[in-house]
Image (cartoon, rainbow, N blue to C red; front, side, top):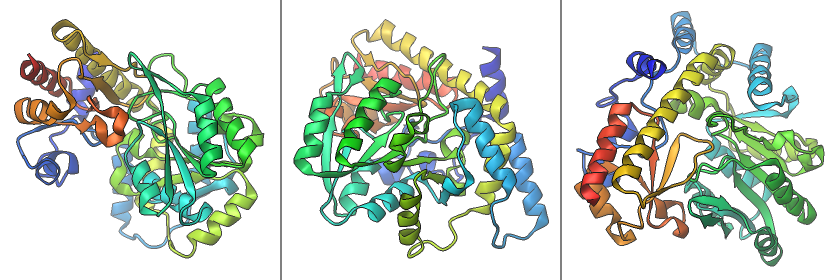
Amino acid sequence: MDVVKNFCDKYYVNRRETNSVKWDGLNEKFGETDLMPLWVADMDFKVPEVVQEALMKRVDHGVFGYTFVPRSYYKAFNHWHASRHNYTIKTSWLRFCTGVVNAFNYVIQATTGINDSVLVLSPVYYPFYDAVLNNQRNLVTCDLINTQGEYSLDYENFEELIKKNKVKVFLHCSPQNPVGKIWQTEELNKLFDICHRYGVKVISDEIHQDFVVGDETFISALTLSKKYHELLYVLNAPSKTFNLASLLHAHVIIPNEKNREQYDSYIKKIVNNPVSVMGMIATEACYNQGEVWLDDLLEVINYNEQLMIDMLSKELPKVIISPRQATYLAWVDLSAYVAAPDLIDVVQKQAKLAVDYGDWFGDNGKGFIRINLATSPNNIEQAISRLIKAIK
């Protein structure tokens, strides 16, 4: 508890009246301003001091002109990913983008044509659907199997959908947002073997890679067999891990040379200077010196989750909370108490909470809410108390 208290005392910040989407954008999204915001996935904590210092050093320098990526950045990148995720990459594999969502849109545009099929596993982060539909591709949805909050996949159905729809790209969320699932090595090998068999490209969005729980281990697609390299586009970013979203800096990792050539040929038509100097500086500082900050943050998230579980299990024992293996997001099934059409009335109008509603993530999310745990324990306690009161 000391770690949690000390971290929150030092880093928790009131974000109201800072143009925060999460706190100040409530009226636009929900039509009300007096809600407790537990929705959009950014955090209510300041970045590590080393990041602030690195950014201020550049501010004091006073020049923000065109900047290339130094060797020290690639060294920091590989140090972080080797120590936490058991892989390194070649410098030539790495491309930059303003965000992971933009990146998977670009890869879809670069690798498919109008009306080509792109497959996603549902429930999933809702910009996945937007990326397919807004680019005029054919959306193919393979529903995960929910067994008392634990999610698995019917691989035969996955393969059949690929064959039937002549799928060109599998847009994969790993770890799976919103259900908090880490895809294990055996599961990934089954998925990627099927994709390999049918020549399906794989975009692996790994932005939540650093939010593993306890002894869980995140399995990056880049740690699997090299035979999958011809399929892979791996995306990650420091923005989720270190709360840097507005610095507009993400990674596109392409291990296959022909795929890099195809991506480069496309991207040069639409993006001239994809590197954010402030994002790059912040990221290098994080990867070099942000580990203690992150480990303490994970303690806070775990504490908040357990606080939520204890309160709900005592007062609303039929609520099902999916086992969170990764992310800082709780996937909560309220259907035993609240009919799906009544969720907004109960959660927003009565409990005065702003959450992500399950059906935003797919039809099989109806009856669920997603709760952002990356805030103070006091906020979580207040929110869950309100929810319990509204339901009871």
